[in-house]
Image 1: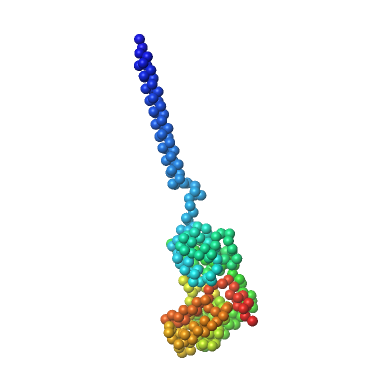
Image 2: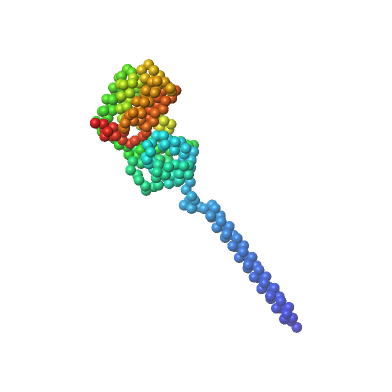
Length: 282
């Protein structure tokens, strides 16, 4: 005679074992799925799911150089267009948001930072930065071309400065004057300084990262005034700096520094120096 209690007990054990195996399989499946999901979140194959750091990466090594150049060489308020990821990195480094406006902001008169991009047609290269081979180029995409009359005026002034024996320009400095490759504001000021203070032109130095050719000289180093050296504390240097402080736009320089090599005079970059001089000159 069959023991019904035994049969029921066996059936119960079989049923419980099946349910246990089922729960175990489901739990294992959930662990595998969770692992796959976690793996996808950590290592996505879709590039769109990864924060875009590639654009910012080339700039990271020269970020300080770029900010220093912009502060020293551009007037306050001159905007510079940069890629979105680059802008965030610059802001994190303390850059002025007004200097680097968000995409879609005011673009009138804006310069542009190119990250391994070809130059726009007609653009002028203002500075180049290199970080482990990455090409970063700051350009003016739409400089204002001088008129034939403005070019002729610049050529006449540069020739007169070069012809003055007091100028004393030689080598590369003489070539800059010979080609009239001088910012019209600086050239106008220099012509007066040579005529009135007998200054001697030692050099037209370019700032760090600025190309040595293709852009108008905006800085001049003067080392003598007549027979007197232009050195820190000298009466000649004091006379010159007093004269410069009295100048009015467009011929008032943006930067004046008395160094051991002479007095360094500089103007910050603008897209239309010839037009500025034309508008402010009777």
